Amino acid sequence: MAARNVNGLRQVRRTLAWADRPAPTGNLEAPAEPMVLHVIVPVLREQQQIATALAWFVPLLRDFPGSTLTLVTTAREEAERQHLAARLAGATAADLTVERFPQLTGDELTALGKALTGTSEGSLTGGLAAEVLSGFPTTADVVTAELARPPQSDPLVRHFHYRGNGRKAAQVNAAAEQLAAAGQEYIAVYDVDSRPSRELLERTAAFLARRRADDGELPSVVQQSARFTTQGAAGTWWDRSLCRGAARAQTLWTLRREIPNLRRYADATRRSHTGPGLPGLAQTVGHGLLVRMDVFRKVGGLPTFTVLDDVAFGYRLTLGGIPVDSLPFTTTVPAAEHLSELLAQSERWFQSYLDYPQCAARWHAEGHGRRRDHAATLTIGAYRGMAWLLVSPATALCLTLVLGPRTRLPVRAAAAIALWAATVAPVRALATAEGRHLTGPETAVRSAETLAGLLLKSIGPLTALGRWAVTGTRHTTLAPKSNRRTAPSTTTDREFA
Image (cartoon, rainbow, N blue to C red; front, side):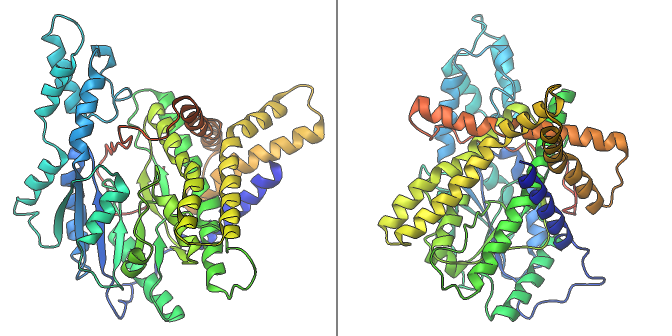
């Protein structure tokens, strides 16, 4: 643990020295050919996010001629609404909370509570819940209404309604099929609460131009890696503190693992590769993912047969030896605001590692990759998955050894180094890179929050394995994603906690 965490600290410092350097003074030099982005935003139960997303993306994309914005709604929303109504049957006033039903908006919960007060049973029925929910517009209704308003009726904005039952990947693929885009243009996948800044896109365009000059062609895939921040929406201090620490721990993982792994993978794929096996394993993320249109079509779009799609997409790119470039600057995305949402999110993200065997079976059967390639990729995936599973137990063990009165001095010292390299040192390095000087008490608080985030990190993966063992399936009726950005977005990607 000490060796792994010290090496992780080294990677954090290397990434911070490479990424998020100040932009050149003055205007960025315009690339010879403008960057064309076809931004696809899949939405589900996100009525409250539509107006703000349009207000952000439409002016932003006008500065990139030829770019478009496609909002993809889905018929799955109606089916999930019926399922939610059935789950609400028997719910009392105490049950109508955002923690219990994160898929419902505050207005929907309030309306259900009012309907409940008019009943004599003291609990909702499925029929009454369905009636209340039917009074609210679907996301498709909201998108249609917003696009009919003059400020939003822009030719670069499109609305596509997916009629199938698939999830995010199916929505993105269906929307991409409707685009008459050239091969050198990019599909850009963002979440509805993503807020890429103009500076981020301008620097992305400059990065693409530099890579084109070096390689003779535009990059195949580009990942805009993210830092995570909370907005203090939880009602209790401990909930806010735990989620803040978990967000910081996730940011450190991005700097320690995600970006270095992508950089090594991209460098390896561009070198002449004559040895056996693959040059690593790319792990792409579904927010801020740019894929050149011809590459997107070549690999068949995002995988729809897995529980999640983004990390599995990196597996497919790895089999094809397709480079994935990590941008030398990051964006900021909202993190979970409640402990229940945090654990559910962690459980959901771990599904990506459980998807790898299915990826190997499907793509080997389709003739993509040799058997030893899949074995190597599965080995790397298994190592990364096990590392995630063991974060909390290993951190707890180190904490016990440091505090234990009978621990031998060499063991205590090694455990203390492991904890220092995972919390105190990277927290201070992160603050320094952000231009902040932390006092002793501030360092202690942030380090303790990060330690708590690490102690919680393995709960989601363990829950995913336990649920799979008990139920026999990893698929759920309800898509668990929820977006609750509570503060207005700024015009910068530097919103760090």
